[in-house]
Length: 518
Ligand SMILES: [Zn+2]
Ligand SMILES: [Zn+2]
Figure 1 (cartoon, rainbow, N blue to C red):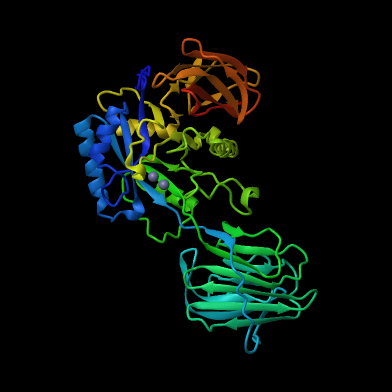
Figure 2: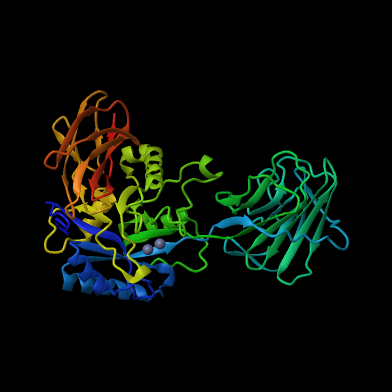
């Protein structure tokens, strides 16, 4: 082993944006003080304790802030208080056993006609949590869906109902000769059956359970057209759908699936995070931005299987508009260092591109960072693997929390998967711009990109790949650590670089972009 330390880089210091502790309900393996000691041993100058807000009591926050201040004073490592905030749990789907039950008694006879549709309001008889909000009545449409309109007397929009549970809904299809039954035989459950004979026989059921689970059963699909099958929230923004082929004898279950996690680094106040939480990712990001703040909000572990970020786009999955407004993204996250975070990078570039007008107007961008998410898993510290380097003016003895947070907000930072880093500047007409900045250039004007790479733990530096607006442009060799290239800019956009280090396997690390306004 050539060395086991992080490099010393003038004007920069290494840290970790995502560390847990075992105090205040958090699920880490060490106390705040022990994490500070561990961080110092591994060459980190600062860490953020991102305790799970959902596990904390409101009065725990003062204790967390005090614990971070004490650890900072004693250990010479800047320990910044933070929170990891959970979103609501989004509906997910899986196959279910077919459990259709033939309807008994008389079908519904009282209907309200509206916009070519027919509706019947029914009390549920129990509290049904839909997206964590309790519902006590439901609007049954003859067209094959259920809806929770905002008021008990309201009629859902026949064209685009929201708060939707749709076992088999054809847009714009007039509800012909359909018979609908409501079954309350099982306490805490409501079962609705639709049966119609034209244009083909269809018989299907929706079963709502007091837990929030929804089941669809298809006795006769009578396949025609392209139905909507799934659930959609009250604002028509997020949902879960089934777009495969329906078959007779099939069952589907929709249930509260995973939540997503968002980090608040350096908030000045506690952010209450009830369980169950009702807010979506963008709403949590807004709450973090809106709280008294010196820091930044970050999407945590965006592609972690158990808790993935589910709010990249609104509307119909990937076809919807990109959701901007997050402060940053954890490009490299605990346990993912060696698995190239390709999907995170694709999402990041998509965000950077769609947010470009705001960025060029001085409104900032989604900053790329790395975190360990050092946790109680295996009870082993992962500090020092995924490292965020920040550019701070005087990093001695302990860098000021405000300076670290300001560098993170501005994107003057580097997301490293192995501790290695490179500086990155762009020179235009004699002015040098750091990562995170916006440079004005004339189309065709020469731009010089340059940096110096520093290896961690004796890893070999292989080179640097320049990315322009998300596309790889060139891979440059690094000579004695230095690399440079000349290029031109022909329109608004950005460059970022990927540092490639090697320790038996390639380790990729990521600069933040430098933006160009033409
Ligand atoms: Zn998490
Ligand atoms: Zn975490």
